[in-house]
Each structure stands twice: as structure tokens, then as C-alpha cells.
Image (cartoon, rainbow, N blue to C red; front, side, top):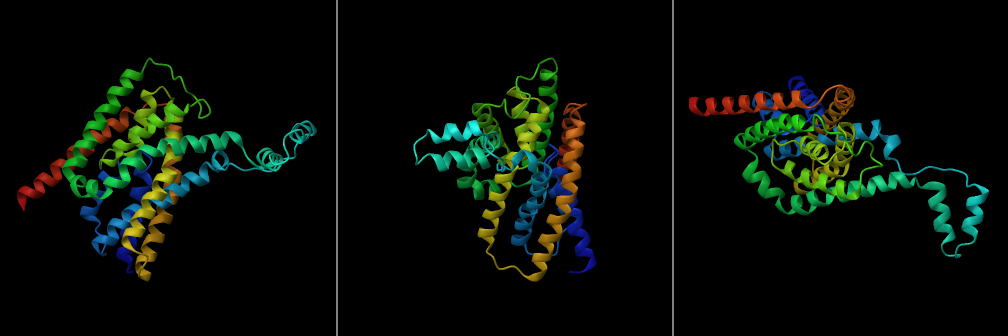
Length: 300
């Protein structure tokens, strides 16, 4: 891999790391960037790369929120707990001891909420993955989605201005709310919508605070992105050239580092501001995407 290709991969990793977590559509940006930073690889591998590079981004969430996500610990049982367990049936005692000593119940509940929220995307996304990619992965759909959701962000933030959040922590979030946020995530199957944008909008409409909506969006990305990457790799096959492996690794490392910065920025930003700025940005970007590709078509 020459130096030019190296810098192309770095640029794509930077774009992925920023746009995956900000509600501005990584797909919309990748379509634009791909016009000017075109990797010298096969189309199949490029399609794989643009999905698998997200693994670097999702690892940033795992690192930053490890303390909220890791559901195991090791604690000493109190005498009262040991006595209570000793009065249970013999077959149940090892299970109860394991649960009390090693399992953080609140974090297990959070993971069950994440799984429940992922069900709509799994049920709808997996069967229609190829169809959606074939029919909707084009600049017109992406640009319209950018503009429509940009307007929605502004309208919803105006509507939400005087509302008080009914859910201000992940522990307060019900399974019903988690499932409904997962339904909003299905909307992100349309390119240009933004997965984080869809779920954050859904969370706000359902009464969660911006912080809770954003954090739950990050956590939802873990199984979704791992699943999407695995699906792409299985479809592509496991036969990579050494250059392709290097491209994937560089892209993921860059996306990982940039994602850490982007997530920290977003969580700091929403403590003081709403999402309107992202709405306006999406509208401008959508108009630029439409204008650029319409102009290119007319001049061709």
C-alpha cells in the first residue's frame, strides 16, 4: 500500500469516527467523501470496508463505557446473604451464590434492554439487507433523508423545549421504552437517516433526557455494528489479501481514536445545547449532496 492510499484510509477513518456518533449520517458523508477519496480496491471490498470500519468506532464505546457495560464483578458475600442462600434448595444455592458474587444485576438488566431494543432491527433488517442496499443506497435517498431528519430535529427540539424528561437515567428506562427506541432504530435502515439520529429522536420523543438517549444509542450500536460487520464479512468471505487486512486495521484504529474524541465532544455538548445545530447541518449537507450530484449528472 502506497502513501496515497494510506492517507485515503486515514481520512475515511476520521470521517467514520466523527459521523458515526454525531447524528449527521455517516453514510451521507461517506458518499460525498468517496467522490474525492476513492480507495484503489474492488467494489466488494470497499462495501465491506465501509461497514467493518465501524468496529473501530464501536470499540471506542466499549472502552469509554466499560464501567457501565461490564456485567461482572467479584464481591464477598455478607453473612446475612450466605445464611439466606443456605435456606434455599440445594440445586439453587450454586446459582444464587454465582449471581450474588459475580453478577451486577443492574448491568444485566441494561443488556436485556439493549437486546430488546435490537429485536426490531434484527427482524426487519436482516431479511431486507440486500434489498435496502440495492434500492436505497443512492444520493437521492441519502440527501432527502438528511434534509427530512434535519427538519425533524429542529421541530422536535422546539416541541421538547418546555417538556421535562420523564427518564433521566438508564436504570429508569423501561423495557417498553427500550423496545420503542429500537423501533425508531429501524428507520436508520434507510441510508442517510443516521442510526444515532433516529434513536436519539426516538428517545427524546419518548421522554428520555438527551444524555440518556445518546448513551443508549451508543450501547445499541454494539450488537448492531458487530452483527452488521459479521454479516458483511460472511458475505465477502474470509479470504483477504495482506493489503486489505492492513487497510481494515488502519481504518479501524483511526476510527477508534477519533470516535473517542467525538463521543466525549457530543456528551459535553448536549449538557449545554440541544440538537438543532445538527438539524441545520443535516439540511445544508443534504442540499449540497443533491446539488453536487445533480450538477455532475447534468454536466456528464
